[in-house]
Amino acid sequence: MQRFRFPADAPDEEELALRSEVRSFLQQQRNNGGFTPCADCWVSGANPAFSARLGEQGWLGMTWPKQYGGHGRPALHRLVVTEELLAAGAPVAAHWVADRQTGAQILRFGTEAQKQEILPSMAAGTSFAAIGMSEPQAGSDLAAVVTRATQNADGNWIMNGRKIWSTGAHISDYMIVLARTSAADGRNRQVGLSQFLVPLKTPGIEITGIRDLAGSIHFNETLFDNVKLSADALLGTEGNGWAQCMGELATERSGPERYLTTFVILEQALLALRGRLDDHGVAAVGRLIAHLTSLRRMSRGIAQLIQRGDSPDTEAALVKQMGNRVERDILNEVRRLLATLPRSQWPGSLSALLDDATLRLPSHTLRGGTTEILRGIIARQLGLR
Image (cartoon, rainbow, N blue to C red):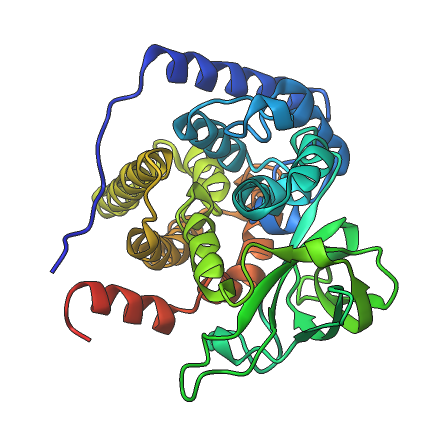
């Protein structure tokens, strides 16, 4: 049985300097009205203008090669920027998917022309992407996707199907779509799946917003009706879509967004509760900080593994599973600790932040893989399944 891997290297002077630079930039942006902090900012906080400002700073596409508009920096530098953006509740949802995973997939599997054409604008924060995995009957059971791409005699493709929960698709330029290109091999439904890089302005694509309980639209339903795609829309190798998708999910599950989504609420609550906590309250806050510190250490280790070229799929599942619980615990503890404090004494935005995060909390255990799926992955690593 292989153990989980979380290497530990101390931050160097470049990382510390970068963290200070990013923190100062965010404070200046906030003071100048550049953004208002929000919880769940990497899903619901879309602000294309702010994304472009990050691109100007060189903080998008940080690990990508310079010839494609990137900056050739280590994965740990990207982690530093990501942590600071999330902790500040900055509106990063517009560029999030493109910077986190779509760009990496294009770098690994795309054509040279796609790299030259698409990646520079993503690194500039002016081109965005969405995820095309889940379908109405294929969420946790991702291998059940029925969206199909059929190749013509001329080598081009025709796509038909339906994707759902496509976060940010309504403002995105591209979507990586998981589709079936050949029949499953008996009971092995993971066979015959492929990934496609689809420009969302292609005729035949219809994107419809899905309004959530908070009244916002960031989820979407995306329909493909006889969508004509060029031969090079196939991303990577035909039939290798499942393996490519699993590698993509490793980067999706392991980042600080899996435990810092509610951090801005904890921070504001502690400002209101300063000097008011009894021993039980102090112990509760201590537990939360200990959990956050552990998850941060684990996420940093995964960034180092990715930097080395490893695929930490199981470690990423562990971070997401533990992070889901910590984010829930933060909201529960904050509500309990604030119960004795009149709302009139709360910081100005805390009430709205807490209400909004509470409405969005159920989705934390769904996006990027449900709790049950993650536990199965972890159990397999432990030899229990």
